[in-house]
Image (cartoon, rainbow, N blue to C red; front, top):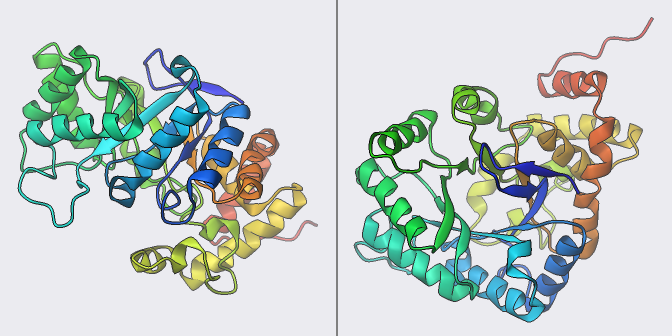
Length: 328
């Protein structure tokens, strides 16, 4: 396993990490979660990602039960949570958003569910335009001073919003966001490859990227429809179908799958390795429902050295719909 610094911080995170969105409680139970987290940890993964809203808190409870059972040295892994959406349905005022009240209470609840004394990473899961950025930055620094979180970050914030947080932190001599958690994959690239470039250069932002497989589309399993039991078949996730599936994307995946076969790799491993190839990616969050699936995703580490400039250009040509010229 390769380890990278989280931005300019001193924290090292495994290049591949393990997340619980969608899978925990919705697709897998405690026994499978135990097996998958154990396999991830044994293969060098040290970052486990979660959020208050995942399965309305049940995801964190499940991960907390597994961590308690495993009894791993707490200093050997990095644990996260995120706050914004809340977990109660319906939510009442102050049970969502980034107010000091919700951020503090959500942190306390996450600590209880995960059965831990502190969070290594704590994210503002979305920007909140109704709350002054000063309140957010001061609250995160308060939680750090209290030892409840070690680093704070953002998820799906714009470059402007992230820089506003850093300017407020500099003004009051506080600590700005260390990391951002954006979606990043072959079909979703704008923030990582354009919008955040100045922040990478000037601030050194770490990134814990999610959806490297575009909700599974980049595995190739949706090339002939939506299989029963797959993520896009889950009730309540119909919005993902409209977002991720199109004839154009499926056509590209078929071409990419042929290229993956040339490299003796799965389509999933190629897609994950492609994300990891970006030096601004600190860690790629994996999601899996079986050990075979996780093993296939971990194989991205073997594919990464094969991504030569020529291979990367061939991938780019496919993604940009450039015709493949014959070799004369």
